[in-house]
Length: 386
Ligand code: DPM
Image 1 (cartoon, helix red, strand yellow):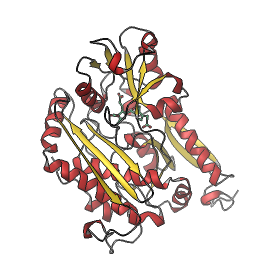
Image 2 (image 1 turned 90 degrees about the vertical axis):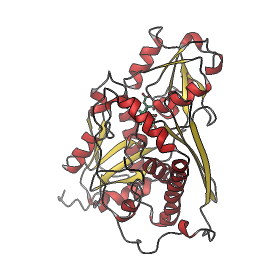
Image 3 (image 1 turned 30 degrees about the horizontal axis):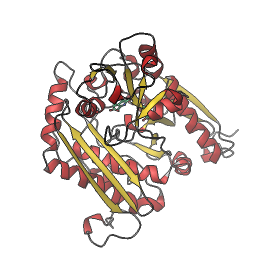
Image 4 (image 1 turned 90 degrees about the horizontal axis):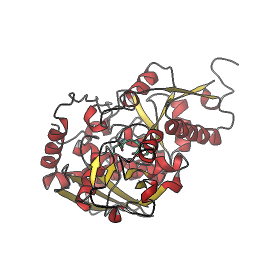
């Protein structure tokens, strides 16, 4: 075959897909590969798996490690070095600002974004509300523990790390935990849906930004790859992802602070509910905003798409918009920013600052990522840089 690969989809001979090497990550990567193959049946692809820092450090709570690109850095370096062409991530593990030259070429249709409770077999019939007092719940997500401490002050929360296989073993083979709280999406993709005892609604525990969605990252100028990725992107999930990530970015939350969302795309509207909590859950700020997505909203100039920046390479928190979606994504981006600003005006920055300070005692300094330097993203830089 010629090296310019004219016979291949997207002009590439072989598409190398980078992935973390956990069972869940590989399952997710296969899902993305299959989606690519559905739109390009003759696609020749290869999965290249690797470990990230987040996979190697198994004994420290995620929130304590302090780096934002824990599960993504090594994959992005491979992308930069051109040893892979795309990398697959859980969107929620991907920082809201990507390294220079990297973009999210596709966000795929979201799995159930809710958190789920997995009970120890002996509590199979229980819910969080009916577990015995002082039961130990395994989670190393500050977002989950903060919200659930508020609702269930009689439960104890203890960190649990490791991939999903390890966590289930830690739950089932010992008496250390009464239950785990995990993203339903990961549990479902592993094929363990029947272990889910309870799905947490937004009144109990709102989910993480991007939870349940897969993202495919690629090099900014790789038009052959971008063409393929545009065909596997899910429009509704992409809009939700932009609103949620704009919210997160404006708040400057990472996994070191309890920030959560609940998002609903309707035919003509987008509703974003967002919140921040103190680590012990005693303080809570939650607010909801809705925008119209179809008709131009003449009530507010700020929600109109800016006219000047209709060129190539505009991304929204790293996400490349589908051509017909620039308008709605501009609005979704603005919605996320406005909601975050409303919470900041109510004192969210104090809550987040205190949470981060409490959480970073004895932990390494955080590694901050750089801007990816395009027009819309530059406009969306955090308003409360610390
Ligand atoms: C991030 C968090 C966790 C992961 C923090 C949070 C959970 C950490 C823990 C940012 N990434 O959610 O508040 O429970 O110790 C992760 C999971 C998935 C992607 C596993 C999970 C699968 C679901 C998905 C880890 N990243 O959250 O149960 O694709 O969204």
